[in-house]
Image (cartoon, rainbow, N blue to C red; front, side, top):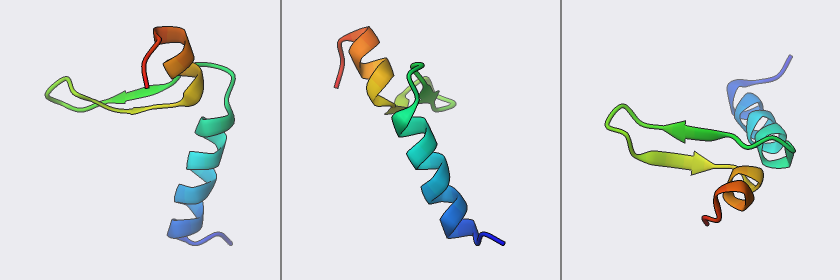
Length: 45
């Protein structure tokens, strides 16, 4: 069984390697995470 810290690493690995763009936006509207596909799509880093 995976421990909590292993789940976070697995999640990060999956999101980083997705071909689809993904982002996380905080409750106050600040972008807190973009995966590489989203960066390419939006022209951001």
